[in-house]
Image: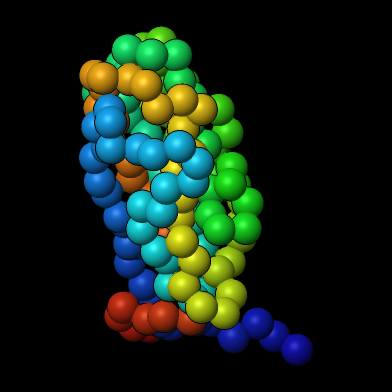
Length: 128
């Protein structure tokens, strides 16, 4: 049996947002939702201004709080840190993406979060 070439292609989708010191509550903070069939393909956090209190960040979902990032340092230096790509596919309903800080007492600090994903079996255009 031969593999049939796939002619349906799709674009990667991204959700990008900023978070400032004081905006995060203790515990998991829902920051966006991914649709059923979504698979995270990339992403990063970019610390634009370091948070002035010792703090790390976990990025995950409703099931696994650190699925995409564990103890990401937002206190020591500015710069970019890549998310962990797991191949996890959202099944069933939408999945809440969460950010959980280790502390919430920073009064200064800002970061950008970028989450890139594709949705299985969705087509943006055809080739071939």
